[in-house]
Each structure stands twice: as C-alpha cells, then as structure tokens.
Image 1: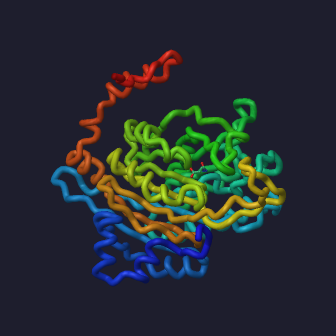
Image 2: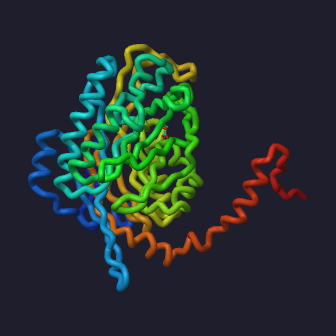
Image 3: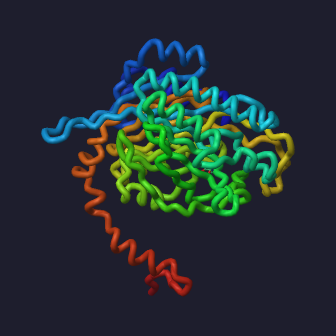
Length: 384
Ligand SMILES: NC(=O)NCCC(=O)O
C-alpha cells in the first residue's frame, strides 16, 4: 500500500493500540514526547477551509541561568501540485503561489518565524521524463525571478524568513540550471542561496540530465531567528553533507525533498532524525504529496513497462531534535503545515551531554579521507 490508501503511521497506531501501549510505543519510536501546541482556532479553521492539515508541537530545553530560552517557530509545508502537469507553465506557477500565500497566512497566525517549502516547489517533479521543454521553463533567477519576488513580499508582510527551493536559471554563468534553495530574510532581502550537493541517479530520479552537483559548499545563514542551512533532498543520504552544515554552525537544517514510497519510505524516519542526533541540531524533513502524471511515457531503464507517473510522494514531513525526539509526521496524503517550536538552547545542552563534537575525530577522518580520494590509494585491509 505505497499510495494514498494509508494515511500515516501515527493514525494507524492511534487507531489500533490501547492507550497505555500506545504511550510506550511512542516513547520508544519517537523519544521524549513533544508538547502539542495550542494553535489559534482561527488558524485551524482557515486550514480546514483551505483543505490542509495543521499540526503544532514544541520541543523544550532545560532552563539556564545565563541564557534566555531561544525559541523559534519553524513551519514545514508539504503539498501536491494543484494543476495537472500539462497545464501552461505560468498557470501552474501562479496556482502554486496562490496556494502558498494561503498556507503562509495560516503559518503566520501560528507565529511561524521561518518557513520552508518543499524541493522545487514551483513545479511538478518532472525530471523523471528527461525532457527539456517545457520543464526547464520553470527555472527562474534566484536574484529577481517572480518566485523570489513573491517570497520577498511574504517575508516582508509576515516578518518571516522564507526558504524557497526552486529550479534556478543562472544567467551570470551561461544560463545553466541548478537545484537551489533561496533564503530570504525577514526583512525581505535575499540573504543568499545554497545548491543541492548530491544529485540522484536512482530509479526515475534523472536529475543529472538537468543540473550538476552544487558548487557553493555548505553555507549557513545567520537569520534573525537562528543559524539555518538547507540540505536538499538526496543530500540527506550523505552523513558528511549534514556534518559540514553543522560544522559551519547550523542550528536548524532544513531538508526539502521530493521522494516516493517505493524508493525511500523506510529510510525517511531515520535519516534526518539521525542527522539531528549526530550533529546536535534540529532537522526538518519535508516531502511533497500525491502523484504527478506527465503527458509522455518514460521508462526507468529497468526493462519494465513505460509509464507516465513517478509513483506516490508520501509527505510525512517531520522535525527532529538533537536529543533524538521527533514530532509525529504530517499525513502521507494531504497538504499540510507542521509548526514546531524549537528552543535552540537544546543544541548546546545535548552537545554538553553527548559530546559528539568533542569526541569526533575530525582530524583523523580528514587525514584518512585525503588519502582515500587519491587515485593510487590502496584500501587499508589487513590480511593474513
Ligand atoms: N529529489 C531527490 O533527490 N530524490 C531522490 C530520491 C531520494 O532521495 O529519496
């Protein structure tokens, strides 16, 4: 049942387990319980009218004598593409802008300070097709494209940091494409951009036909609400990618994604959560929802029949904390906003307890990695 028939793991457990067992299962599966946020009824009503889910949870940290709590509210948005993929490009982009306008309005009512949309949020995830037109027409300038301008307005209106992952057209460097996240400050200024470092070559994820591995390294953005980074989708399978954002000081790492059930659903709850634990930071895993159909058939290069859809994007967006606790996921089937209140003091508190930054053998790894990437390297295997 990889499609829309299964709403979520949480709903299933809640439906079938007696309360006492449910609490134990949640303790083991999710760690320390997150507090449910009391969200404004006007926001819940607006979400219901707009047909999207709205959930809110808070992670708490211990009180300190010398630092005040550093609370920030993040909003994770997951959604389906509202119009069919063969609708005119501008119509699809406009429909997504309108959808996000409504969603961000509700997030603002819930006090969200930093909002992040899903990977390539202005388009269907058409890279499976390997066709260039019309899909490359969704690409935009990071600096002054229509989507950046739209997000700048949202940021100014709501005093919110907006993380906007788009297909970038880089006209300063030969008009090439990139898979990029634009970070817009709460003032409305473009704070900067970061690019997807790892490009999948798996199943129908034929993204290397369109753009190359990012060339901007692992930037961290100092926002009014904390230091953030963006590890785009497939980068979540690479522990060193998370590590580098963390070494640059990220307190929250967003992972805007587009991934399908058959490929990755059993990995989904593990990877971003493990990264939060390993790097003493918060991670925010965001996935799109639904099934997208394309006008022309394509194959997966595996001898199986040609098809017109990618499979089912299973949503299930969640936030994980440095102590390993996590929120429940949003549904697998519906658009939604997950609001999470984080006390960033928890990052240093967990660092002081577990000490992974202190006990990490980075110099040793750096030395050994520098050797291992040399063309004449011989693996250090001890033989009899
Ligand atoms: N968008 C993307 O990189 N998807 C690859 C598949 C996965 O990482 O689960």
